Length: 335
Image (cartoon, rainbow, N blue to C red; front, top):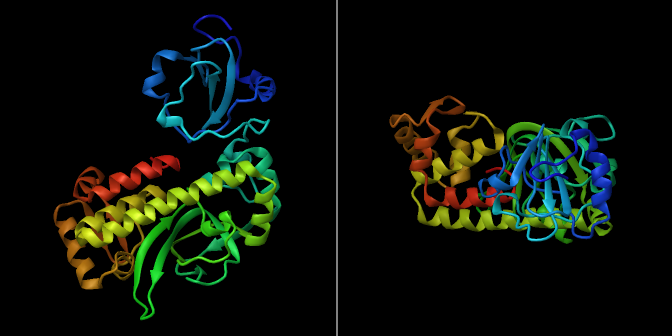
């Protein structure tokens, strides 16, 4: 490697990966990023679609992230927050997203399934059953035994607390960044939350028993799913505080922003009845809050759908909880 530039091309990455596999502390995973971190700008050199970190003469890591390879250095290499959360290398460069399918050939779009190492994905792949996720489908009941964990490709799943009198309140939402049934990742078979599809989509499900057996022989997969479960629990805690301390208009703005982050669309097929359920209030109260946001020209509401027309101002109208949760989202690759 010459000073200031790495002497290899993208075609050489497979061989380079084999070399790195023999280095104890090499790493292979980071959340998706579209540009090199600002802190490393002076230490990165582009070679085609490859960014090379050139701080020290000994390579220790290679990571394929959204078509870009990140090359790390053994000594003195400090990974910035933007690409933190690394796991030990599995011995292979990750497959590109378009290459991952289940055994029936259904393409995978779930970010969590795309992030895990090839070896872990190969172990899980035989158990991935493709499923459609129609609106209002209950995936598992609160307090009931978990039969499946669900990994959405598209759509939105709501996690809600259900009281004895039937009243409900939002606890969290899951899109293609994660999975439902997080308690299964830590050896439990029940959840206190109901999981219900609120925006139609599709994805994959895995029997809980098969998932837990796979985790026993896959410590890196276990770490990945457990990490997601911990971050999700932090979001649930923040949401609980939000529902208690902030007004409905702020909470509605926060919830719409979180939903858009997960479905990648400015048009959200949501009814006022559903929003009332998620925010733990009644329909008239939600209608008033939506009317305020619409009057400010932040959203447009038509029957059965909410269109976000000014996201920046909607962020300004949301409470501080959206910013906090968005920091957690950064750990999941959504930020």
